[in-house]
Image 1 (cartoon, helix red, strand yellow):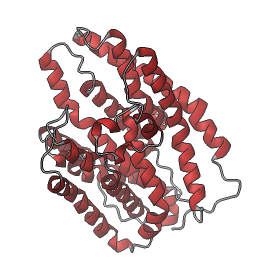
Image 2: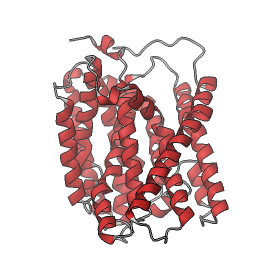
Image 3: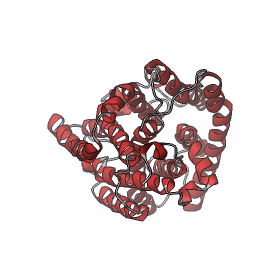
Image 4: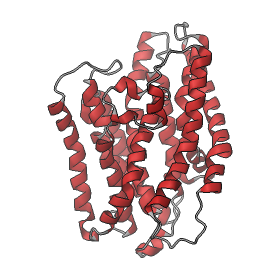
Length: 376
């Protein structure tokens, strides 16, 4: 078994590649659940039923992976202010540009939006608002960036605590946090036993907000990512093949699909399979075994996942809106519109990454002084 220090030196390309598949799943989810453009009701309802859980599970994957990635690449003795500045540069310049473009698109197309949603969107305050409709204003997907901002804010406080946990107690802490994830729906049902349902899902809106969007609830998945990184680093992740994790994820997907009206389907059902998938793929990279997710083109697409995520819903709404949401879409026309949206989103994501995301970070984010790697 390699030492923790040796393990920390390994790059984990498969985890970057998995971001590509997760971002694509979110795209398909919004393509199906948002515009509802398929003409035949049976086909429309079927696609909605099949892909409803895709976006939900992918967001959980991103949140756990965020904690894992930060813990894996943590720098020793880096001031908190420096860490915050680097995280700001990773997210905000691209977020700002896309928000401006989203507002411009709405002004050009005549789409209606509330002005009070604009500062909430720019400042990433949406997930703190129990009004779900307000949380999706301007660029609806950026509510998750509001959660990420909380993760980054708490990382310099949480990671030193996770580092102090004895290796033989890491799994106990992990199971404890997983138990808390399963407790969140109970708290939500106790706090909001009734209420107006969501438009797209037969579930009380405030329960949905507390379980799925509230940053404090989603912080648990981020902490699980921190714990998982330490488990892998100290060599205590079990010898689980990735296909076992994929089977678990598929089983969780089926459960969350058929139990869509339960708040447990939003996060809890798939949190364990997500942990197993990330851990097993990381172990595969450490052992030098190739995978589909580690192929260069997949890794490249995974590197574009953030800017792709920022653009995808705006592109879908504008491509489909150009023909009219009441247009009598046939199945081939609907699939063609989705394919066109996918190509345009990828092109815009590549341009934003090369013109804004990477240049800003290279110019302002790199430390001028050498940094000591994270300790074992």
